[in-house]
Image 1 (spheres, rainbow, N blue to C red):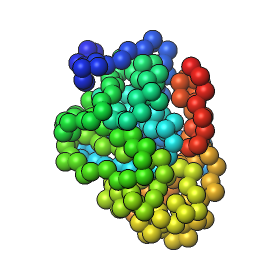
Image 2 (image 1 turned 90 degrees about the vertical axis):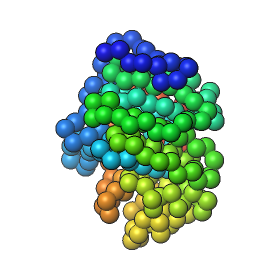
Image 3 (image 1 turned 60 degrees about the vertical axis):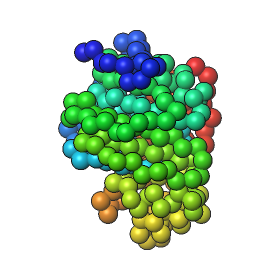
Length: 232
């Protein structure tokens, strides 16, 4: 399959091994994010016929992991980020024959996708400020990633179709609990293992343990929110 360039930067292509490695991260119900306590796959509906918004309070590693696994289902991905250096190596190595990925400083309007070729706009927001609401499109998801949860961006949680929470502090857990209506948020959201992600969607709360493949460990590094990435 030939994928047209997303931007003037074009798309990136990698050797067959990383491209094949991401094929295992799809399932009939969506994208496989991790495993539950019984080691059964936990999936998320990252792409839907209707416009979808996802907010993640997490590290850069989780954002890149989601991107890498979205490529397996044929997604075309745009990464809007002010820190291009943190993405350069990943963008160069990650994309395979199933999807395409590019980087922009500011993305245009969301383009509609299809079930076989969904669109993902990943907004890497390294500040504590909220981002402007964007009009949606079918089979197009906007994933906004914040390094930290503060009073300045907490309102974005309530308007999202899905929220992913990783490595929250007590203060962040209280903010998230208030925004999402979670009882005893300090217990439910704070002090969790570094590889655990809490998924809040459709008035439900569940957690998953991220299991990285050897390729993902090499490409992305430790999944912990505050872990520093190793060299490539």
